[in-house]
Length: 131
Image 1 (cartoon, rainbow, N blue to C red):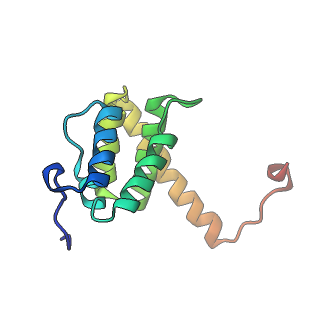
Image 2 (cartoon, rainbow, N blue to C red; image 1 turned 90 degrees about the vertical axis):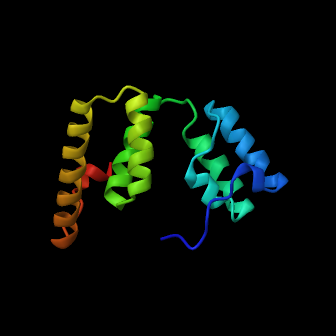
């Protein structure tokens, strides 16, 4: 349960509205999602987070589907239900199929298992990997 309620556009101050307007314009949506509405309780955090997300998720060397699938994989590993739902939907919108999702989850599961094994056994890094 959240200690706050979402800040709706009609109730937002000018600084928050400006960020909401940029989100809507950039994402071409009519409404910002709950993540941004809850961050709006701290306008500086809202603005800083939006600017960072906008920069990182902007077109670049990696395509949108790959970026969303990476975000989804990290969200699964971190156990963030909100981000799993949000970035899962975005990845599907960008072309991720159910087969791709299954393969991604297999990789996430295997990476988490082998990471813990390597850490638990304190496996030293091979010289060949350091080059």
